[in-house]
Image 1 (cartoon, rainbow, N blue to C red):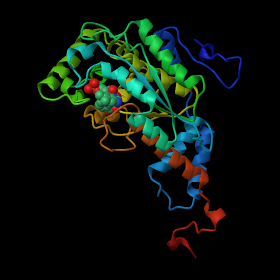
Image 2: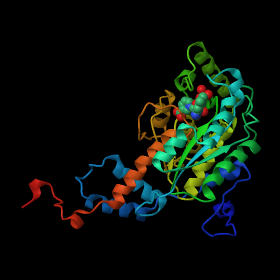
Image 3: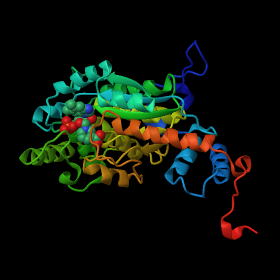
Image 4: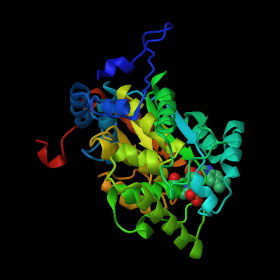
Length: 361
Ligand SMILES: O=C(O)c1ccc[n+]([C@@H]2O[C@H](COP(=O)([O-])O)[C@@H](O)[C@H]2O)c1
Ligand SMILES: Cc1cc2nc[nH]c2cc1C
């Protein structure tokens, strides 16, 4: 299937496109034909970096991030005028099994809070200069209890993937932060991680919003039961997403894939977001090359998940909030990296000696 089939140019402007899929198979095909990094933009960044007025390597990871942004935007220097945080919300059948410290009704209440501007992510977006979109996905219809069978039907997962694709591809920003809100979704994330990477249920199961003691052991049993009930025939990453994920996790997967198609670098938030993204990597290795992990979540399984993906978190602030909070903070670091790379004077421009003292005549 040709990827161009999914690009629709709305009448109002050729620069806008919108990507949708009709089936999981179409989404899988989309992943098989993703654009790679732009070699010219990467080469231009690599050529400029050593000319900037600083000792070589002294901006540490900011240097790598500036080059990474240019390569994935396909533009040098990278531009970060518009950063969008997309928060997706969903409700989970397993919430009824007592796996969260909070009731499922909090998902909708927090969506209202995001819309009213009262959540942490609202303040972080203001502080960093990012726009926020909040997409509530059928909150009145929780996914099915995945200890009994698949969490979602094919139609349900495809609708959620499309919701994510649409948030990015209709009017792509310069960079995308993805996050989520969904009571019980750390149970879903743990089940996905166990299905994709194996190990013991307890290794992937953590407190989430604050579950501990016997309730935590019960949560790990729910995770194990979900995997047992859903993975008999070795499903691929997208089937794992359908069977053990939730609508907000599927929307995240859609947004991450849509960003790749639209040349938008992505910042992944915490445990749940990374687990959703891991389904793409499992379905098609390399699918997350345009993504960075924002922060090391305090949820214990996150570090292991990030390592499995071969990534390294940008920040480590002991956060475990979700709702895109870590991603938005890390976008501030990306903005700083891009500003240094584009705005610093070169040694020649500033008349600063560009050699270590020993090499001078
Ligand atoms: O981002 C994280 O790493 C993270 C870690 C723990 C909890 N959360 C948030 O807390 C909710 C899920 O926790 P729980 O206990 O209901 O599974 C959901 O709304 C997430 O955004 C998020
Ligand atoms: C209050 C609250 C806020 C959140 N934000 C993201 N997940 C959350 C979970 C709870 C419980």
